[in-house]
Length: 215
Image (cartoon, rainbow, N blue to C red; front, side, top):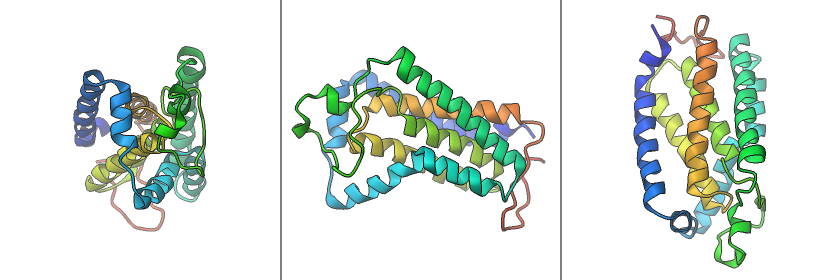
């Protein structure tokens, strides 16, 4: 069965959320949206989002690739190709197309108005798109191929948007950066799945799951 048909609800749900967020980005200024997220903080969420944001880091991606070596060679190849494609897209846009896009810490000269943790990165340039958002949504779009139950689609999608939200919460990006970054990640992941469409198999790391993607 075609993968994109079996996983249609993931793409439908993502498309709905993406459309709502895109509409919101065009309806309000990026300053308004940024402060709506960034200035609603507390001690618990400071720690929570500081940890959550790392799920979109390159290190997390590489750790999952190392883990995949014990599961499936095809899974490993898909992750590596996904990392390559998403990195080219994200870094190419950051450094060659939108190289003048400033991050909040540089955009708002008065950094005292921004909620920003001293222990997190203090990046100031190459804001668009959000690399963390691209990375985590690429991962999600590849991982769901190997999961036997559709309920994981929603859980991973929710996790992806938490990572994207964390980038604004921590003062690293504007809302538009993470929204477009998520789209770039989903597209990157879909490209990888299409390239490997004929031989995609279920990972069986520790459990004897029945593949639903090969039926």
